Length: 172
Image (cartoon, rainbow, N blue to C red; front, side, top):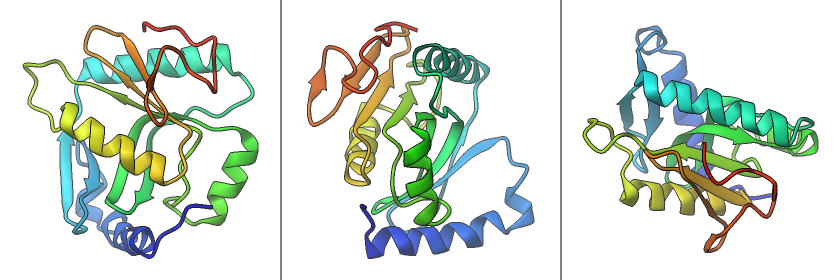
């Protein structure tokens, strides 16, 4: 089960952050960087709609799994919040054993790219960094949904389709 001392440190820092009443109602996605500093990303409606569409497709193609949005994962590089995840019920049990936020990633972490003219922090460099962190934390795959709705599937390398959910469409 992937757990590093660094991820556990980020887990502890996360508890400090979520207990701050001033941060609870912010209209931003809250993450931390490798130093434990807070990183805020504004939420866009288009982004939320894409999350809903992905969640619906995951429910359709893998109805026995769980597919929450905005799911925090403590990684060696900070607490990252995947836009959508998919995990099997057995994986969820193992993830809960590592604490909250989990230091074990779900089987699939999905990130939605912003429109190129949006001011948001997620660009391809950040997607690459998040992919590595999610995979190091035990994710089997990381999917990146482009602004055009194309789904790009990554395991150790980019693949043509998901190995975990092979019937998942290539476009949202």
